[in-house]
Image 1 (tube, rainbow over the protein chains, first blue to last red):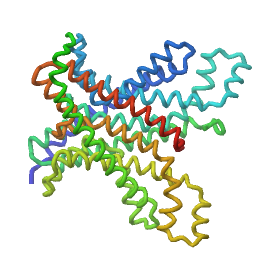
Image 2 (image 1 turned 120 degrees about the horizontal axis):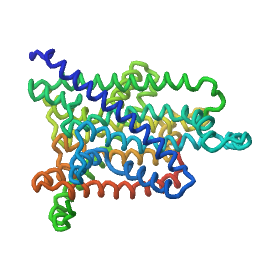
Image 3 (image 1 turned 135 degrees about the vertical axis):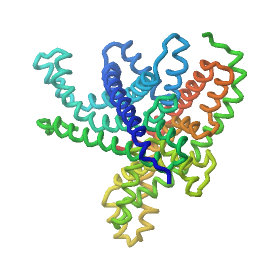
Image 4 (image 1 turned 180 degrees about the vertical axis):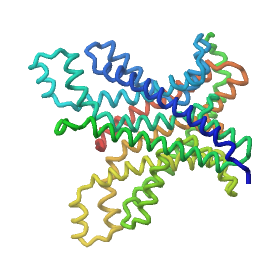
Amino acid sequence: MIDWTGYLPLILQGAWVTAQLTVYGCALAFAVAFAAGLGRLSRHGIVRALASVYIEFFRGTSIFVQLFWVYFVLPLFGLTLTPLEAGVLALGLNVGAYAAEVVRGAILTVPKEQYEACTALNLTRRQSLRHIVLPQAFVVMLPTFGNNAIELLKGTAVVSLISLADLTFQAQVVRAQTGSTAFPFLSILLIYFLFALLISLATRGLERRLARGLDGARA
Amino acid sequence: MDWDWSFVWEILPALLQGVVITIKATILGTALALVLGLVFALLRRSRRRAVAVPVASLVEFVRGTPLLVQLYFLFYVLPDLGILLPPLGAGVIGFGVHYATYMSEVYRAGIDNVARGQWEAAKACNLTTAQTWRHIILPQAIPPMIPALANYFVAMFKETPLLSAITVLELMNQARSVANFNYRYLEPMTLVGAFFLAISLVSVAGLRMLERRYGRLN
């Protein structure tokens, strides 16, 4: 029996990298999702077209290919990224494209009367979006955002293939050094699962809090 | 770095070999996922808690962990237990089981969508449970599911590059090896991206058609 307790710190280091990737990736995805989702609903044709091209492109190609493209091809154009930056960029843009559709869909679920009421109250477009539409749409977005975040978490495993020392990478290191397979892979499966559980509990909690006072307005 | 067409023609045959493997893996994986997904969905509805609860936990666990790690698990851990799978076999099983958990949710939604009265009517007509499923429930439940299931087919297709991590020589792996061999990444990587984009744009058009034909599952 190989003593694998010595390898636990390595796995935990990997968990830290995975957590960082997930948090930064989600932050980028969140920003991009709102930019592209609102862009698709813009009055200006050019903005709508740009947002659509971005969304279709990133949803249409594989995350794996995007990551390799960012990491191996961008340097040829003079933009060299560290593996962490490349990972955050690829994951954020990929998941952001999916989440942009969620933003768009949720905004469309806000009933028409709400917009009419905004006009009647003489709110500007920006004011009605900020104070009326988004607070209601956001609650609708949250559960799907939770799923998107879990997708992103699972996507981080792919980053190990561009030599970033995340959980999956460290498990491979442990396998290579000890020849033991069950311990590293079972333990990282468990850690991923715990992370996913954490995300879904957090979104559920947030959803309950934000839904307060919005009863009846929810789709 | 400039785009070199002669290099593109040179590497195209190798990439096409990869395409064949990619398509093969996707089709086999989808077939497995379609069957297993239905099995998961039916077992989860079982009245026996000893069956329903473990299946539900398994589905949640598989859905909450990365496919890549599951592939590694199949490829590296199972041989230690005496089960030696070829790379493509491990890949197909990994994809099949992973996507079956997603598809089981589609089946569940589709089955729940069939009105309760249909069950009652089947009982009133003295049909057995098996007859009810076969002749009443599934024929109504399956058509609205088709677009959602096709959606997962496309999603799986886009995830097949993961197979390169367990040494399957699919498109991505072929592209990477020609890129490493020639030390030119621009053309192979871009071709892979273009190929996936082309296939997925075509399949999105196909999906829209399916949605129009069969309607959309809520």
